[in-house]
Amino acid sequence: MEHLVLTLIAPDQPGLVERLSNAIAGNGGNWLESRMSRMAGQFAGILRVDVAPEQSQALVAALEALDVHGIRVQVATSGSPEPVAGRQITLELVGNDRPGIVRDITRLLAEHRVNVERLNTEVVPAPMSSELLFQAQARLAVPADLPLDTLQQRLEALADDLMVELKLQAED
Figure (tube, rainbow, N blue to C red):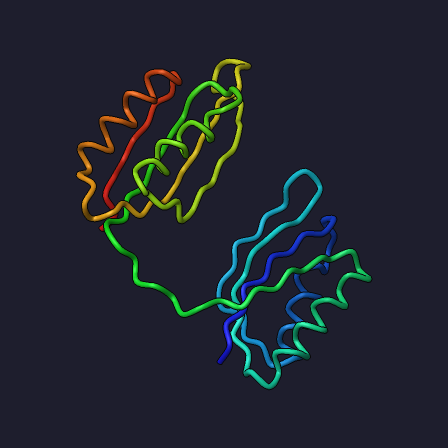
């Protein structure tokens, strides 16, 4: 089987996912996993599909044909999954919203060769006030040779500078 990773974006509308799933199933594809969401009137997602190599071209053509419905799909062939090196941890962050929080946190993570595997963020009103809070949850792959205490200390120092609360937790 050939593994394809698809990204899509389209104006949000009923039937969008059904059109996508029909194109995949109708061309021998098997929908394996996905992350999709509506945001600011758009619907965006990423998904992984298995397809027999001899049906791959037809599937890609069917996905490209969805453009007539305003659904833009980009296709990439995935390699074999690499084993995760190091440890998995979750990061949770909350603080008053301001520009640069994601940039500053991810810069520190990159300096320590920490891979961001999943990142979910949102801005929500604070309970009992009208202030906006920035919230983030991430799954990180920490290199085996990086002590978690070192990463925690660096992130906590940055969190103090950013005036955000930060929590790290090892995944089981």
